[in-house]
Image (tube, rainbow, N blue to C red; front, side, top):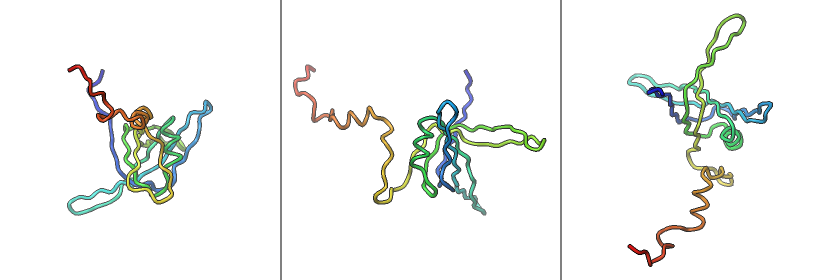
Length: 138
């Protein structure tokens, strides 16, 4: 096991709607880019971060993310190597394992589904201290 760490966290806004596609086996892949601002002592700017996600996260991202929305993305840094016109090229991206919508939603917009159905079910049933039996033996 390695003691290395490859984890990146970003907050930014989508520059365009995400592109979702499916593999021949039906697995979803979603790609999008976010603009992340930075500010130094004498300058400021924007970096575009390419994001890829897979599976259920890709399906949710493709359904709920749109151009201009602010998101938090957490994942790992990955560099792809490919050849184009006989020249070796590299492309960096973040493979996301967590995405969270930020900011308030406009009126009438649907919210994404809860991320943890077990917590939601428990919250609906009650289960707080007010629901506990007063005859606890200790």
